[in-house]
Length: 393
Image (cartoon, rainbow, N blue to C red; front, side, top):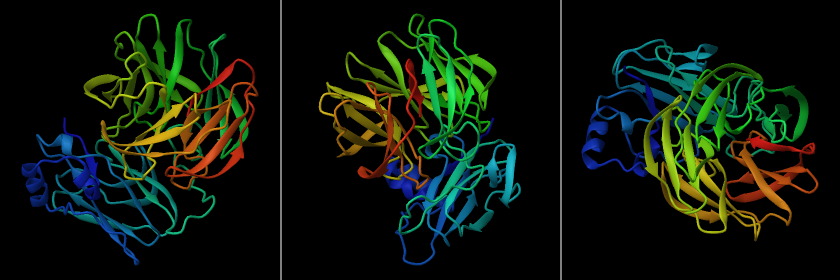
């Protein structure tokens, strides 16, 4: 069955496309040169469609532009649309309608925010991120722009808490660093724990990923806010490996498993399509003394990066990634003694992932607002009750 892929042309030079494929892509009416950042309004091209045999070269778009810029969609194949909103939930900002090969559609973005879009034919999705050329302290995303950890659909990442003694889960609805409300989540059975959160079935709601350390099995619990509405079995992990993070590593619109082996330091990406393991690729080995603390797109190139943490020194390092390949790295800020990185999410909505810090002794949380690898400022978060830990973001 054909599927829609959104491809950001500016990333072509970093995707390792061989020359024959590049010629074919150029011949398909989409320019693959990078777009320099102009002083005036710019137009960014995004291709829509699927070409048989080249599905691995087309990726969901996540383009970042400035107010006044345009996005121009170009149809590589027929039968697709670009429709603002999330699958099944159009928000009326734009809708190209289903168009044929060679068609184009342009929309101008005049306000800051994250604008999701999808194809009404098959539900494949993308997004346009609009940021100010000069960053502002706390721009507010528009209503309905959900993040990977946004359970109540207010555009803000929420905390998922887990109690290892009772196995209970709770969702703390957050507004930046402020805990505004709580809801009880489902309780995993004994021997299972929540290891991550992501929207596996792409219905716009983050789901629970459960793992059994005994059987090595994984299970996905499909969620609607704090309510479990269904479940399905995922792949079984080999001995010695754990799911350390969830991210759309190959940018096909489906969250993938990022596996880590604490004995060898090895990482592996398991490419997923909902609950089905469809492929794998080795990632870089993490040096001794370091752990994978989180994943986020720190440099804004559309690819999720690794955040490493050293519990002995408190140091952090960001490994910039291109799919499963470690491209380069940068030092991040050093945490004070007693603190660890509990998660990564864009809490203040400025388009940059931030650090969520946790102090085991005091149960305190703190958000460090980041600009790439630079710690800009911080804010106190809520205090966690005894026995509970943050499993997401």
